[in-house]
Amino acid sequence: QVQLVDTGGGLVQAGGSLRLSCAASGLTFSRYTMGWFRQAPGKEREFVAAITWSTDLTDYIDSAKGRFTISRDNAKNTVYLQMNSLKPEDTAVYYCAASRSNYSVRRRIAYDAWGQGTQVTVSS
Image 1 (tube, rainbow, N blue to C red):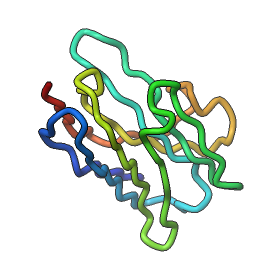
Image 2: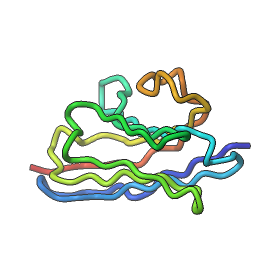
Image 3: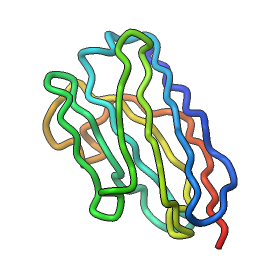
């Protein structure tokens, strides 16, 4: 079965950086769009970034543009989220997700599998 393992979260000061990783197994990774979502306490899970499987097109939530970079290494079955200039409002549990579609990448319903999440805490 499909398994996604999120790692790389932690505690960082505002302005700092973190790189999240998501290792995938049980799927043909190169044929899946990969996304990152986050969920802060008391809030709904929201889209952060995605990278498609066919053309490596990327998409970001507005607040992440210019600060976050999503990338993938198909040889390692891994997707990354490099987060720079972190802000306290980035504090959340971050989840990676896999989708067989290249469409509606911002919608949770498009994704077939989810990681367990990794906590990111940004102190002010």
